[in-house]
Image (cartoon, rainbow, N blue to C red; front, side, top):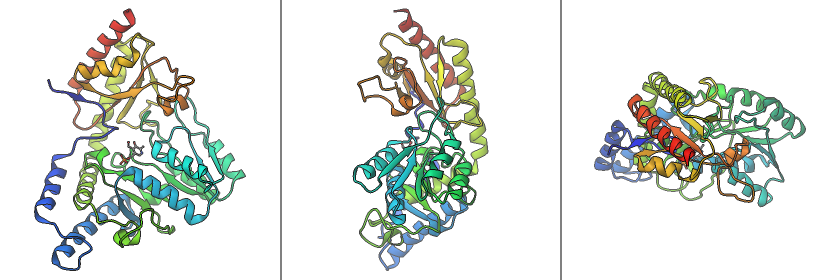
Amino acid sequence: MNRIYLDNAATTPLDKEVMTEMANVMENYYGNPSSIHAQGREVRTLIEKARKTVAGLLNATPAEIFFTSGGTEADNTAIRCGIAAFGLKHAITSKIEHHAVEHTLGQLLKDGVIDKLSFVNIDSKGNVDYAHLEELLKNNPRTFVSLMHANNELGTLTNLERVGDICEKYDAIFHSDTVQTMAHYGHDVRKIKAHFIVCSAHKFHGPKGVGFLYVNHTVKISPLIFGGAQERNMRGGTENIYGIVGLAKALEVAYSKMAEHHADIQGLKTYMKEKLIAEVPGIEFNGETDPEKSLYTVLNVSFPEMEMADMLLFNLDINGISASGGSACSSGSNIGSHVLTGIGVDPNRPSVRFSFSKYNTKEEIDFVIGKVKHIVEQNIAV
Ligand code: PLP
């Protein structure tokens, strides 16, 4: 059975072009980039070439790009080291951030590094209340703001330029978790006005375990990981050469066909949304689905209350369909999605996140709709 993979917000398959590039490095380069001899120097050159490629695509300078082990480390570095560098005592975030942000800020509060953590209001579709953000900043100068670009469960987008403008007005330090949108939209760091944005290569057909942190040139932070002088003294540890080369290649490939893939994937999402409305009774969507307000790779569907609701994903799985999801936390239980809970989704309704990539097809969506319809009808009828 050919499986259908609709869990691309969790991770994506490696692009063949990326694999070829990485295999070449694995086969032919083994020097330690910190070594001064020829083998070391040639690997150092590969890393700096990758940095230049990444910087060029984001309209950043190479000095603003620091390679990391992925999105989680980049978020941790931005938050922990950004707050430390400015001696900030207050942070603003939302209740629907990724755990890499939520748990990091929560720990800083617990440790007494910050003494206040405020949550900006979010509406029932996951949109940030910009007026409330401004209100919070007015009353709290010298604040760290962490708001993600696209929510990884809902797909709802935040207007980064707008948040950047508000932060600039109140002299706040702005970090955005851009893991889900990097390589899907053309980020221009000069327009966003964020001090920190982050990347994880495995979300756009690059390798796992590698990412980067963009740090605006006006900000000077200390490392999160101490050790050698790698990454210009900003991150100790021998570089993940294959990963870094793969990341740059994956970003390059994504940018070269971004408009085309955007249109194709948005087409699949819209098609699936319309088919679900037409064919599956009682469904609703979690988060924004309007193309202007929603990440084109994510569609979060809320199904009617049904028998064996927790078996929905399992049923899809045994039918050859990979997706992810869950339900909001029911009272007294902390198992479940803090994001769905954060926007007030009914905990009795199971939700599935379908997330798409350039490798999905309309035929796959048709197959999935047929199976979903069958599973829902069977279970509602019990
Ligand atoms: N932030 C968001 C929004 C994500 O979706 C993810 C991955 O699931 C991460 C951070 C963590 O990235 P990584 O898997 O590279 O640590």
